[in-house]
Image 1 (cartoon, helix red, strand yellow):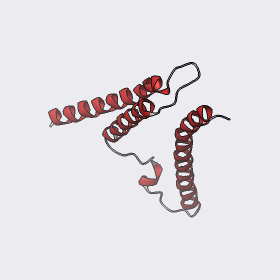
Image 2 (cartoon, one colour; image 1 turned 120 degrees about the vertical axis):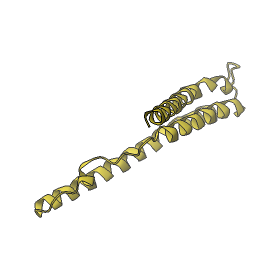
Image 3 (cartoon, helix red, strand yellow; image 1 turned 90 degrees about the vertical axis):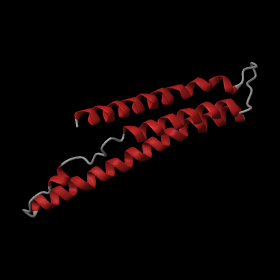
Length: 124
């Protein structure tokens, strides 16, 4: 197989593997929490309220936004810097638009975080 096919395949599979790893980790965490609840219920103990709800981070929109903007910029720069040229004369740098989706999504998260923060300050 030629490098023109292997490199994009690796680049496309790496984020998929990262997402799968995060989903497997969260599934194992939730399963362990429910097993703990079942164990405590079988022993007749009071169930703590902290174990009954999913743990959530308050106002994590800023972190998600910054992460997505960084990923989008990284994808754009990666495609623009790679010197690969296809047989048809097109360069891989023409695919820079794939980075716009995470970039714009990250901007949306940052806007949502900013509006929520502003509304919370006005409510005081």
